[in-house]
Image (cartoon, rainbow, N blue to C red; front, top):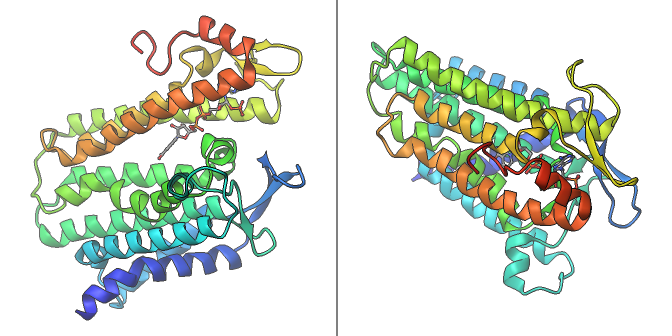
Length: 361
Ligand code: NDP
């Protein structure tokens, strides 16, 4: 019973510890892309995600090494942990939404989609959205390490190299996000989403517990003996996806922060303009209108395959989730851009007809 309670409250304690680390560790201060709703000034952010992750993982490692807490502890308490994170996600969603004035929509819509856009606390030291992404990413990393540790402890003589590969690739994904935290300030989540159940519960519960669903369902299985050449192909698929997603996101970031700058030293921006607004239409943004979403789906597929059980359904839930999430988001974003950019979006659609997958969709 005490173990179950400890597991339930573990995500709460971890999130509290992460808040403390976020506040006390040094951070860079940067201007964002989104403006304050009241002053119209660019919002400022304190970013130190990668440092918070490194310190947290070091503490987790030290706790296992010196006997404070076995490395597989989060695996052993994963069900109460999930219940605790889900409960906290619901409570925080209610608190964030109900403490803000209504948007005029029904209470259920407000609860799901939120009321405030970009709240910040403690005199701007904590941005709610960036903090939520940080804690979601960090607990995901701890879960992955702990689930993999469980596999190693269960099969000490013949652990699966696929699981090692999966954790390495996923850790790359988490570190990449935190290293490029600033680029995330220029994305849909920041300028188009409000803070409601979807985002709050999504970050506190879904992100740390669902993203690793592949390992959750496979960690108890023995080594499938996947040949090294096949594991290498899976890793290649992941990195092809990563190059597309990161490349597209960076090209847009460079363009938004310095519109005339040449990307990667070789791609000068080509644009469709109306005098006031401009859209990129070359490089990654000339392949399809959201080629970054394709990159993300390829990465997720590489991760699912790397576990070495291509016929198991569990690992495929993760790429499937991306197909649904990014497929619907592309439609929303397309509508939003058509409204914002008018005729130049029409022109962009004609020039780059593919939504996500060039030649297919
Ligand atoms: P985008 O980075 O594609 O951002 C869309 C916005 O970019 C548009 O609203 C518009 O904003 C601007 N834009 C679109 N086309 C052009 C163009 N041709 N030239 C200039 N600006 C353009 O999408 P997201 O923000 O949704 O995603 C960002 C990244 O995050 C992606 O790689 C995505 O896959 C990833 N992601 C990851 C998730 C995860 O869970 N791991 C979840 C969701 C997304 P503006 O009005 O500012 O011009």
